[in-house]
Image (cartoon, rainbow, N blue to C red; front, side, top):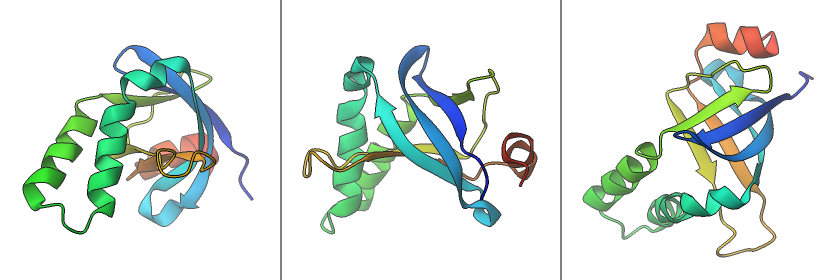
Length: 124
């Protein structure tokens, strides 16, 4: 099994937490792990939760989903290794269900990580 990579997560220039990520579906460019938020996570939490609510609600319309994804994307989420390497996935996704289950772990996912970056970080 591949060793996890410690990463720092930013929303713009604001540090919001860290995670240890590992390959989840490397052929699809999906990497992730448990996210440990800092107090500054509260500044982005409403947008993260709104997206989670929309994707879980079968009655959410297409316009509402698009709006929630745009709001998440406007956070400018960025993931960097402890060594300072900046990852460039197609999307950075934080899955936070703690509003419904306070004991649920918050997960960080990098979606569509380019193969050359995955190889540099994980050797995969």
